[in-house]
Image (cartoon, rainbow, N blue to C red; front, side, top):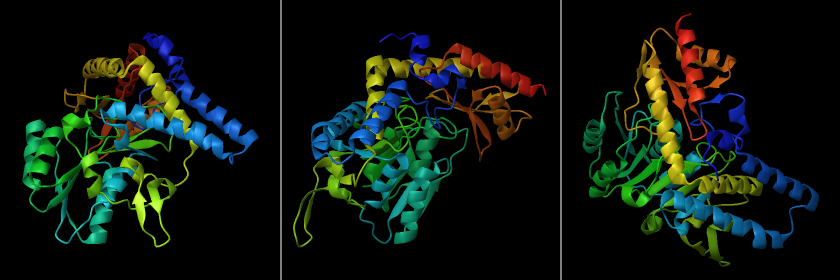
Amino acid sequence: MSHEIAEIREHFPATLTQAYLNTGSAGPLSRPAAEAIEILNRRQLHEGRSNFSIYLDEYMPMQNRLRGQLARLFNADEDEIALTLHTTNGMNIATWGLRWQPGDEIVTDSHEHPGGLLPVYAVARRFGLTVRVAQVALSDDDEALIEKFRRAINARTRLVSISHVSWKTGAVLPVAEITRIAHAHGALVVVDGAQSGGAIPIDVQALGVDFYAIPGQKWLCGPEGTGALFVRRDRLADLNPTFVGYPSHKALDTEGNFLPAAGAKRFEMGTVYWPGIAGLHASMSLREELDNGWIYNQIGQITATCREMLEEIPGVVVVTPPAQSGLLSFQMEGVKPDEAVAKLVEQKIVIRSVHEPDLLRVSTSFYNDEADILRLRDALEGIRSL
């Protein structure tokens, strides 16, 4: 497939009508994904949904192929991948599945997304656990972050819940180093990959993490209601399914004894939206045609270009560290983030704001070009001069 950005953008029609710079909230749906969803919806409309042979001959093999695609994204094995509804679904599976005991502690940090934080606090409330929060500052480098986690993790820590990329600042956390500290104390690590899945290379073998959750609708440009959870094979025994359903089991007797499904599939439950599975599979196929390595490199280049242009604007301070992903967060002197976002939307430029601290956030991807960044720069300069 061609790597010409103009041709690639034809596969993402939403990028043709605006400067689409908010993939970190939701990526533009790819044309192959939309077409796959529509085809399967129409088929179900006209043929019904009760032909069991279709499930065996088409749907389930498609589901297996998708697990394979996601496994390659993680550098994992197919049986270590559970298909989920979103990142938060995966974070809940990992957080609720541990055998919590009185006195156990969870470590997280102050910049985590509610999708990861809320499962932590819900579990802590249910089981009477202690949550230790590493207080993160905008100025923290890797060394400072590692030291803060080192002080927070102790012999009572059972789980460390962190992001790979901060949704607020775009900082890439030193996950491998934090994981080594956690494992040295006997703790497990779950990673919120909402801003990393599809944006930067993920190698769960090198990171050493136990669980890693990603969404389908952001950097992978699939539909909502899709995602994946990596569960390290040797951690399966440490994680009990909290919710179970037909896909979760391999065998069940009349006395209630059941054998879980092999691998991470045991964490899948109930009926799925098959057009959504088809849509994510199609979008992943498009990514693999483009080559994930090329995609990561392209995201890095366009993000670097965006950083350079933002730093040229008087009064703008980029807070994202140089080791960047696809997110860039910045402050703009004399400009309220929410108001700036509203003014940009009027000019068909889509970014977002985050709060505590108050920041503007740009998320670039492989279908963005320099013209998108120039439009953003010019619009920000115009807002600044008001």
